[in-house]
Image (cartoon, rainbow, N blue to C red; front, side, top):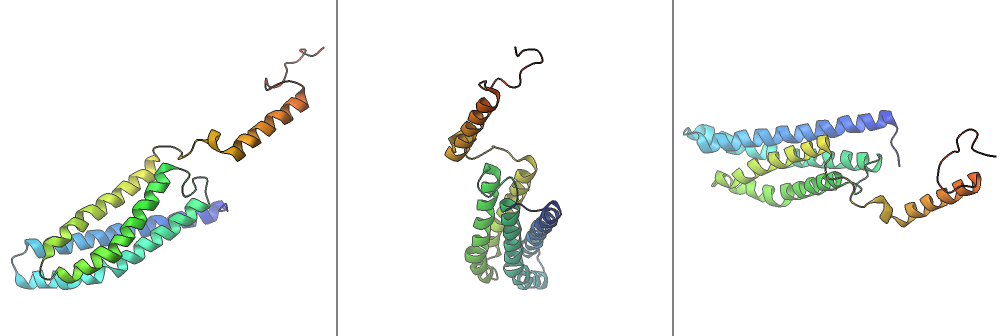
Length: 184
């Protein structure tokens, strides 16, 4: 499946917006947790802790799923693929891991936050750091391909057939076109 350029751009916009939304929700979560930990006013602490469930689970999980879905479509519809390049595979793994952590670790932790908000410091620090890491991977695209092309038997066979076709066409083995006047 190859996305047309216009469709790819719209999926890319949706991917960037959903990732930005996720980062924003993480920022709100961080502000609420830090406010609850640092404030000496019990009303402010109570309000901050009551507001946590509004941002912490379902809006964040929705942003994570949107980011994952648009990323999968972009991966399948572009030259990068889902597991063709290391940076894409790592981003995919980070996104899936974080979505699972939201569902299975953060959701139960929100209930305990009313008595122990310090327990939410870990997700407040780790989640934005991982999202920043994923953003950096998108920009710099490090590490190259997961598998080298020469190890793919189908590609090796296609290259071999191409060489054979070239030899049959030119009567020469892979030296390229002859210069003018070289034939007698």
